[in-house]
Image 1 (cartoon, rainbow, N blue to C red):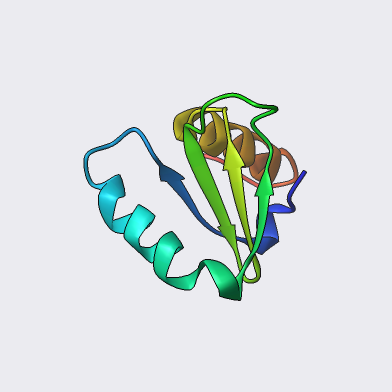
Image 2 (image 1 turned 45 degrees about the vertical axis):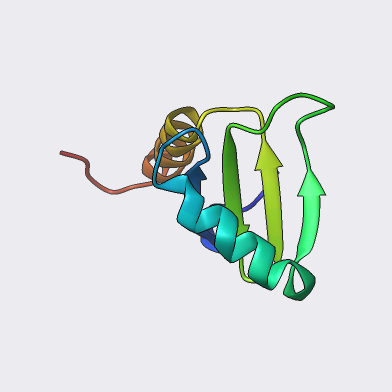
Length: 79
């Protein structure tokens, strides 16, 4: 688990624009700790924190929804 406050970005690795992300990861991979949370499966998304890259089999949309649901849980108001 990653705290919402630590997440810099959630990136869809299945999207055509993910090539730029993959280039970034390749270029800066030594600057980050890499955690493969796919349990041997294919990575669908990448969660970026200040110092760690998390590979996840869970889609970026699902991760975004989970993060939003938890964040709004304690909100004083919602739209």
